[in-house]
Image 1 (cartoon, helix red, strand yellow):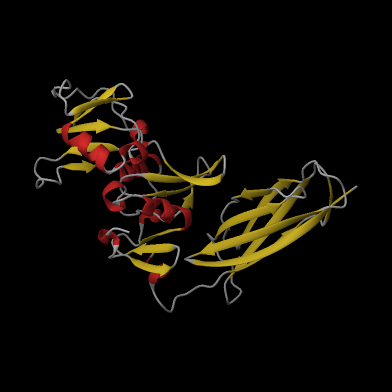
Image 2: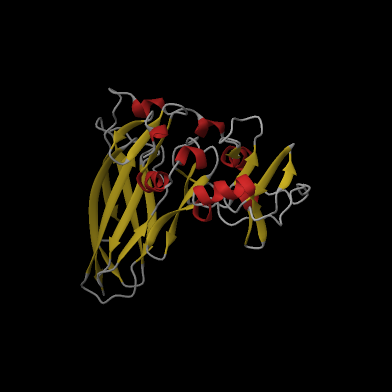
Length: 299
């Protein structure tokens, strides 16, 4: 991890708390964050914790400059950058008067990336972390900018040499325009204060211990703290081990104010008298709890 991130405080091996904004990165989001050579330069600080997007129902986390999405890929769940550059591109912005026939320019996906923007793109694995360019250099709000699939670069002549290319705060702009829920932006200071530890305890149940093939099964999860009070907002992962040895991974909704989350699962086209095993992981404020349940396929 770059030294610039060393001011953050680790609570557990797979999470990192940022006192600058009062938010935590954990699990696969933290793994992706750390995969960049300079994550604060490319992504900025987290401005929310991980949450389920109310429109797409995908687990996301907003940063100052980007949004990360946890999506299902060909090899399971993976973190991807959201195309905020595409979403916030202004097609009416005039083109910047920059020569593009210079050796310091390169055509990428039909657009010219030039000079300091090209140096930044190459230095920070722009193909992966910025995406392909989706415009030529433009003048936007008085600055020279260039739009990329995931991000936007801007020229800041007032900054010292070596710091004049920056990444626009598209994450904050996109959050304010599309969600605007200021409560999610508030610091979650309790997640980093000793003595306020909340230890989740998860319990899982199925509605039908015996269930025919191709039928709907309801999985219920209850998450309580050490005082047996319900935990609202616990993040759940359900892993289903099917009779053929394959595993399905599912992300039900976070627990409600009663500490409960439910998910409907089809039992699949399997022969009777086989067992479907279910593992549940609940995460809350950096602490986790695991539990399991099962049901038998019947005639």
